[in-house]
Image 1 (cartoon, rainbow, N blue to C red):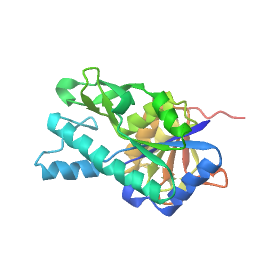
Image 2: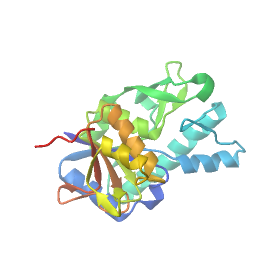
Image 3: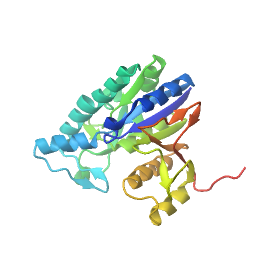
Length: 257
């Protein structure tokens, strides 16, 4: 079974087009089983504003107090997960929303309880639960929320959650959905880059703006042990005629054949 983990950030959910779902359908027709991990940052920030809570970040991670954790879970499981599952069902897919803490799907450890609060890193992925959904014909749609040993919920960075799920499932690849077709260098989409090339492009400014955190997320996935990582579009077909379209990031040294 060829598993593909697809990470959809909260900022791209509203931009997903029919082409995205067409690609998803073609993936499945070609023997791939997708697993989706999603975020919900913009919606969380909106809800925090309504509750008068200031969003705080440290080293790119959301500082999560008890009240913030409640809002994070409410938005991710009750809003963005429902939204994405609804879009999938509307497009003819069997989607199963899974809150990461349900059934111990994602188990985690506190990163820095004093400095970050209820923020964690995934220690265990319940692959049996996810595989059971896949084998029953569902696309698992997972929120990046884990349960700690003390039974409390942990907020997990969505990119790191996707990487952990991909590694645990021995996924064929982990794809990060963006609003562009891939990495643009000197006006052209590049289909293949190495980690070293990416680092160089960031350093010299040819990868800039919103693409920088997306690419860094992809590099973090590789660092966690995921072998094949891609940047793909949520607006255009990323898989067509049994071929991937986007930017594939390889190991630091390109292997010559």
